Image (cartoon, rainbow, N blue to C red):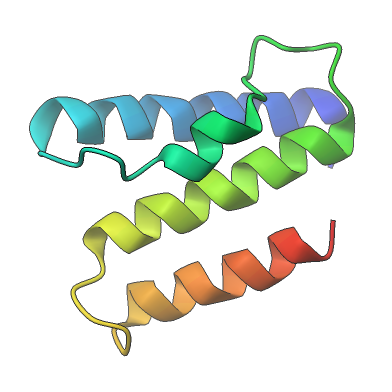
Length: 87
């Protein structure tokens, strides 16, 4: 994927995160993403930094909707965490 495409995907995930925060009480659900400090408008950041942000944000979104550790969304969150660790 090109860097521009990653930034577009990153923007989409941020929009999903913002919608979740508006509609649900999810205090602290996106701490790891916020601590990373890489946002879509940071176009000067590396491609890998945006990939890492996407994986972390995807993991945290999946965790919001997973109801237990064995749910399919919880397994997706675990896979995204393993992929993020490889970057």
